[in-house]
Image (cartoon, rainbow, N blue to C red; front, top):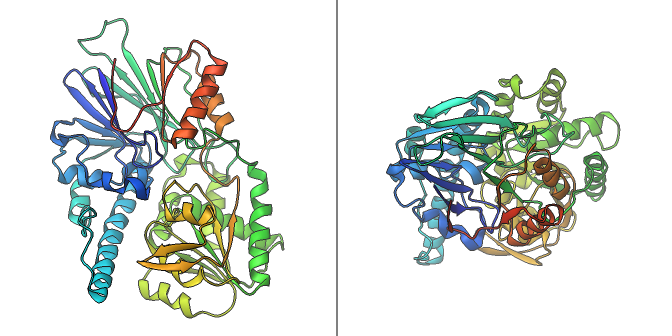
Length: 474
């Protein structure tokens, strides 16, 4: 058996782990790379022979975990794609939106290049990675598996999805392999953490833990926040109220990059409760400028199996009972915000500012000191969001330099990712320590920090931080 770390090794986005076991090959996740330094990887064919793959197991529907599925299919993959029902429904939405955004961005770029009489960069293809027809072909391969339902995928291959508490439908995946090459009494058990969430967040249940007494052969553990301890979730409302109140007092607009799935719904709920408590002005208009976020909210309501009655009610209130809430679907509705006078709260995707309508709002508002840009989630290295958070005095948006004069605010504790202590506790809850722990899905410093902490607690543990595209043989 061998593993290849085709993505999210030494970086955060582009999750893609290849497992080859006898004549059965599969991927866990097939995500889009979003860091600018590695963006060219999206055009690579990894794995080299998609047609040889038997399956893809999808941990959740974020773009950096599912966003290259249509390219994989266009390159020849014909196997099954497994995920929870909520994950597959959200993935359909996200992939169609991704194809649309790529087509719009390419058209915008071509128009700009023609206007500026520029030739396209030969190292960055001036075309979309995939078309909506490729998404259609991908959807036909979807096979839903409910939580906590061991499912026989093929002879000697069984998969179980457990709630990871990260976004709606998110999972960590247990895969048991009983193959001819193994001793019949010692099957290989692989656990892929996906992205692990935090306890006590609105809307979602807390993450489950691996509780099987059977030992884990190989654990693939995310490390997005492997080098830090996050602020308490309970402080988020205080930070958000302060950011909004300061911006409104200046007569400015608060631009909020959000992930359309989970984060948008959570922040709308928090804004609603802050209004009800009199902690922010109730007359300031709020705009959710993301057709995908609006539709994602409707998907939430269709999947009560992911949360209890109380959190279902919270998500409904957050999306539907805000007064002065504008749900924007069309580009024309979005553009009208550029001419609007006075304070407003504008939530738009994408959450790392790499694509979509948020880039237009940043281009129009980041140069005004009355405004603020309020970051509510992780910003991967090399993304536009990370450049802004790190204090760049000027950023390039749509091919033009933009001075950063707006107040830059980072709300801590709202992330959907477990921090270092929570990751360590999740692993320590396993009845038996895993034989091997691969630390993935983190910037190199974060992965190495988490690996070091595990070794401190378990000096005999075998913990490995792989490099991109590295092959490990068992």
